[in-house]
Image (cartoon, helix red, strand yellow):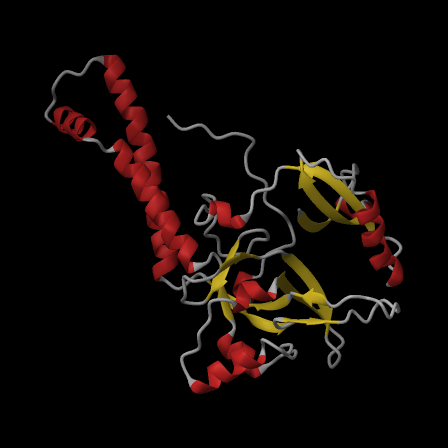
Length: 289
């Protein structure tokens, strides 16, 4: 099961489509989801959010762990991207996903601020703390929430996009693709061409097509390496978060409500990397020779 929230509908103007809690289930699921949907619908209804729809669809679900390190070619951009890898600053131990963006109204200035949204475990798990003070804060956040605009969180809970681990992994994947093309036969033909030897036109055309791909991969690898070395992955820090704990959900008056795991974090993004709240869709197909 996967949970998302979009303006979802058939209208070409996104603003005309209702905000929709979109729940994807596997295509081979035989379970009846009617009662589950009714329980989900009750949540926005109890909050008097009557314009929020709930939709359950069959879909292909790929968990991030199954594609660890697989970044798209446009994965290293200055502006942050929703639904892309998110990691712990300077550490390769954690990797999650930036879910999207929300607006928060400051109680002091009354101004709306754009923030990134993700799960708290994505910005917490894997951190060890380098000082006694950091370790104490991390221990506290297991049981308490991260207060808004926390100075401790600004120093400790820093995040990057893409994650350092995924970025390094993708560089290795690209290098392997280059190595697969640059076989001894490929390198020998490069030398023969440089020496002016005659090459059968068919073989020459095939070699040139492979060389074009190799050059593209080397250029992409250089871009990823520059992004990593220059410190560009830095995205920002946690502005507020749920912490790792279970608590009663106060929005529903029922005394029998079970404890629910609250798992959210709001990211204050460095202004230079603030993106828009759009989802980049990849091409329908991509073929390599």
